[in-house]
Image (cartoon, rainbow, N blue to C red; front, side, top):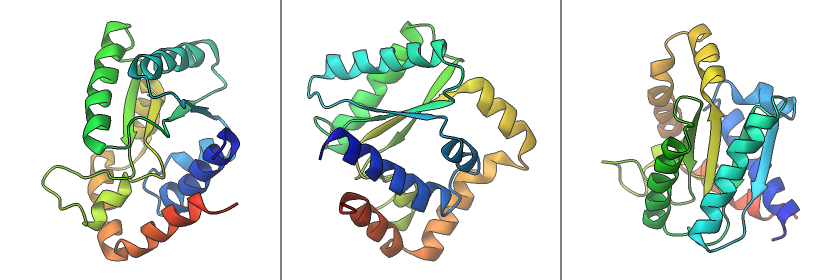
Length: 182
């Protein structure tokens, strides 16, 4: 897939899963106002992937009209365990670059599996995406929207319940459709 197709695939997944099942009650506004930047990093090299992360943090610093960034990593992190290792390093880099408290990273992967969950459990689909993704969120925005949302600490549990009630089939279908919409 080319860059445009990868971005379109991720947008389709966001619209149908994240917004469609209301896994993130704040996503719709930013999605519809096109305040999400999508960056495709098609490099296997971990150093280049981390360099791209720093570039995106700097882009957010320089562009207040971009609310959030989604980094799409279609190659090099296909293994969920490799991805988790990369995510640990990315979070360390966030601290080393003095971005802790300014941004936070959310993680999505095609094989996402919560600790103590079975690989086939529907709840994993709350964080399963068509490709490995790093979602960079602005802390101030999160604090602001969460302060207005009733019981935000219950969002993850609500999402798990929604996923379990629907079963994994609709989420699998969306993931398959996201890669074949061309």
